[in-house]
Each structure stands twice: as structure tokens, then as C-alpha cells.
Length: 357
Image 1 (cartoon, one colour):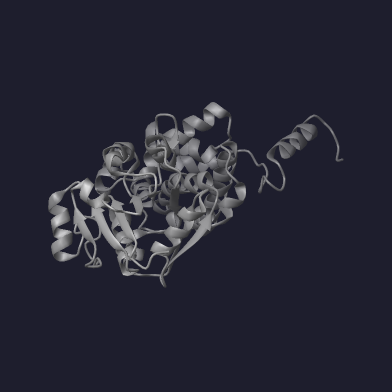
Image 2 (cartoon, helix red, strand yellow):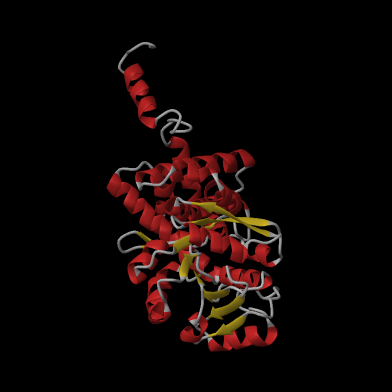
């Protein structure tokens, strides 16, 4: 490997993209960050601060920001795409003329495109045809990363070079990068947990206790695993940082955007009001709609997602969602130990007058 510093491009000027840009610069990489807003880019270069998304965080002064996509991508070995899901494909298309197959492209976005139910790494593949594709996901609240609090993440890819180079670019004494080859599972976990953060925020606003929070998170994990396996992911992935790790932090922290939306809903605010007050994208709102429809279409049992959809889009009061959870079927705890179908079969047998076996 060359002794020359790695050249890293970050597409996106949000909180997580900014934090990753600074980490890579801390590690000695030559980092360029693309932002739509030339004024914000100029401020980052002048003050080494992103006043819009991380106003209290000092960015490594070696990070160079620009609204010139071609200049940012020139010579980059690693490209981190930190764009909200709704704009993700458009930005990748804008970048495509200045990308090449030797580059490593990594999505940091936790969301799903509605058309075709596509994850962001699938969009990277479709738009570029490249082989060095990966994702970063995990319990990564950008504000805490900016404060250099101890944090871990997962880089997932079928490509060993992608995994290794991301670990080299971002791994440091306060940010640890662990590897996975289940790209779909890691990425799906990052998208799905946003749904349940909304539910956790609502539960907190309604004054529900720790038992309720614990039940909510573990049943959420069961739903995540059930849905992901139906889509071809490895259920063991959800025991790691991108599954249970990310779920815990996003369901427990007021720094989580989705949690804050749920909290506002639990206080009785409408969805539009809750999202507007946040001032940033809460990916979970759109994900609720997409996942609920996908689960219905494929027959996947997801009572929490169904209940959240009714609260967000059908006018059902937030408190009613908790009651719906308690009225859902008492089935298997861990379905990969005791299949849900076995429990249902036993219930039918007993209801039909059968004895024990």
C-alpha cells in the first residue's frame, strides 16, 4: 500500500457526513466534502464549523468543503455518500460522470427508496455498476461522535478491499469499525430501527415505564429479524451493532431524530408539526409506510409497524398503539429457537380440545 495519504470524498453536508469527514482527516486522509450550499461550504472552510447541523463541533481544519462535485471527487479513493434517501439517487447520478470503477463507494444513509423498495447500496450498484460497494451502519449518533465519545460502527460489504479500506480510513481510538459481509442485513437493520425509535419516543412521552420500554425494544428486534429474514438477510446480523446496538441507542436517546418525532407525537402533536419542529430528515417516518406495505404484501407479521402506521397516517391516537401491542398474539419469544408457526399450531391443537403431547 502506498504511503501517500488516502483521498476521501464525502458527499453530503449533514451531521453524520460532517463527523465522518473530520474523523478521516484526523486519521491523516486528504478529505473533500461536497455540499449543495456554497455559503455553508465557505463557512466550513473559514470557521471549521457546520453551523446548520453540528454548530458546537470543531471540524478538523484539513477538511476542504466545496459545492463543486467534480473537484470534490477528483482523485478520491473512497467516496462516502451521506445523502438523505429521497435525494440519494439524484446525487449519485450527478456524481456519476466523475466516478470510476476503482473507487470504493460506501453509503452511510439509513433509509429505503419507495420505488422498488431499494436500499441505498442497491442504488449505488444500479447507478454505477461498480464492484467496490459497501455500507456503514450502527449506533452512531453524530453529536456524540463529534464530541469524540467512544463509538463503534459496522462496515458491510462482500468485497474485502472495501471493508479493509473503510476500517483504515475511519478506525481510530474513539471510533471503532467492525466488519460484516451481510451488507443487506446491516443496511436493512439501519433502516428498520428508525421505525421503532418513533414508537419508543411516543412511549416515553406517554409516561410508560422501563418494563414497557424493554418489551418494546425486544419485540421490535423480533420484528426486524422476522422481516429481514423474509428479505434474505442473516438473522445473526441483528445480534450485532447494526441490529440490537443501533436499536438500543435510537430507542433510548433524545439525540435520535426519530425518537424526537415520536416524542412529539406522544405529546399530541400532528405528524407535520412534529417533523417541522425537528428541522431535519427523520428517515423513520417514510420507512414506516414502506415497510408496513411491504410486510402486508408478503405476509410478514409486524404488529408494531402496523400500529405505527395507524398512528402516523390514519389518525389513531398514540396511546392506542400500546393497547394494540398488548392485544397482539402471544407467540414465540425468539422465533429462530422456537418457530412462531409451532406456537400457533399448539394453540390450535389446545383450542380444538387436544391434550398435551
